[in-house]
Image 1 (cartoon, rainbow, N blue to C red):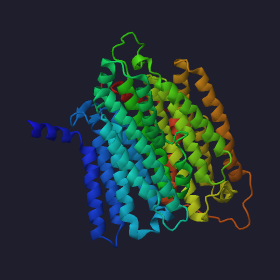
Image 2 (tube, helix red, strand yellow; image 1 turned 180 degrees about the horizontal axis):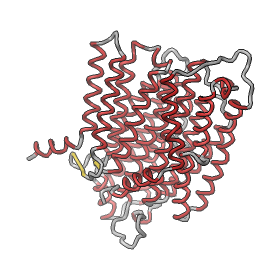
Image 3 (tube, rainbow, N blue to C red; image 1 turned 180 degrees about the vertical axis):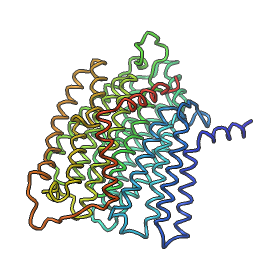
Length: 499
């Protein structure tokens, strides 16, 4: 009976199993085919693509596996698919990255660690036990620490990796301490068990508040929320551009998936029936969402204000990424299915516009050797295709129509207004206005500044052009036709939490 149950669970664990096998085989192939590391790159690509295929086959399933350690539901499937798509795009970016291609001897480790990071994100997305949550987060973090310092030749790469490790270790330690307090209050490790433990008897309020704050430190570090963001600008600047792009989207998405499931399942009061459809109430009126609202305001405000002063495009996009984490936190604050669905919609849009911006930065850095804003003088004339593409991505990041970013912010603000969080929506709108300044500054350099006499004139390769257009098209298309994505987000939230 036990063996039969394990085998049945493994059938729902195929995406994660595929990634684990791919990781092992990539390492083995790297030892055998040392002179042809590109083979391992394509093998890694196929492995992640297979994991995405198995993930898509899980659509419509809602089941706990391995004694409640992991849950397979539409919510987890959504974020696993998002992580897999992002990984596949990063593999394509890496083919044309000078930083990656000049380190042939270490290329096998690069792709293997990307696969390991993806596996960690899959586990984070489906974790329904605090131990699995921490294990998934640490697998992702340990792989990303190494990848952040991948380009050892760069002076700031090792510094970025060291800062990342220090901040990661401290935040993980604080989070584990908070989990230990929560275990002491409830005697359970799985989310539903903790919920029942908190529901059965009134916990010590100060102990519960302390545990929640400590756990929020871990979540805040993972999603780059203020004041746990200090590692982000330095790591994003020092890491290879491909890894920076990966961390800014996939890692942040997995962190949000983990945080949203944790707060909803653990703190939802299931005894209250007279609640409007799609809303939920917190146990004993414990207002954890007020804590997240404060983090949201601090995160979007500081991210946008500091981004105004940045001349390095990677650093500017790092602070922009912090600000976008603040916007997405607004959806979690509402405590409703509509708010969670808005976060999912935002992530779908954010995937394309942010990866697209980083890809253009990578191509410009390949040609000019610089990530400074001065390298973008006259880019609209030197390479019209890249200039227009970058303009579209920046307009989308600002949240202006007719781009995907506008739809993402629209659903967030509508959800906030419906839930009567008018002051938070107003703060979000004001921050969007601030972000327009530093995005428009890049546009001014590209189209209103003459290129210098020594500016490099370059043309993109046909394959690079295809990748750029493959990101530009959905960024514009989803700004005009977005109903299927909205339906997908709503469907992903319906079975969220195994209610």
